[in-house]
Image 1: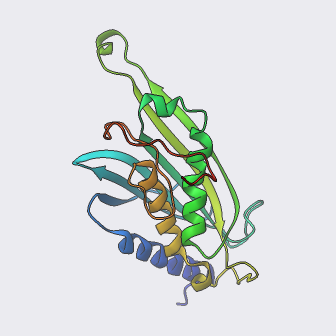
Image 2: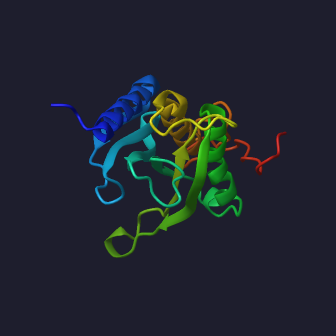
Length: 215
């Protein structure tokens, strides 16, 4: 019995997605397959990740691959990637008015560095402050950065590939961009991105420069 074309395309896309995971495997970066959301698209796959530094987990993320053979409003294609990144940061960094702009640049610069093209990027940056009360009043406040974003994989500028042309869309490159964004959030400063100082990092490190500034 022949496999329906849409299922065959998604199976090939998942294979490329997992190849991206395998290519990024390295010490300090742990991946786990997790259930994908069922209501966003007819087909979906998801990977969660944890970034460790000096034996401590400092950043967490999730990347979801969506596929709808009919496409969806705002996608400009059949595929969409949905990313989540969370990292602990020092309180002074959480209070920095540039956190949102710099945090978004972690993703945009990672995409610009790694992928052939992308379309309709969208997302939010959130500062999270957790304080303890009652029995937890002695716990130090925790400050975190959260990025939620989505974008559509696309071909290189001037080249609009067919939606099923997975080689042109290069899903492994998008996986690499997400990993680079997580590394930046964790303070690891991958090539092509900047990082803010995460919680517990050595004091005295220069803070991130505003977008567009290079000292």
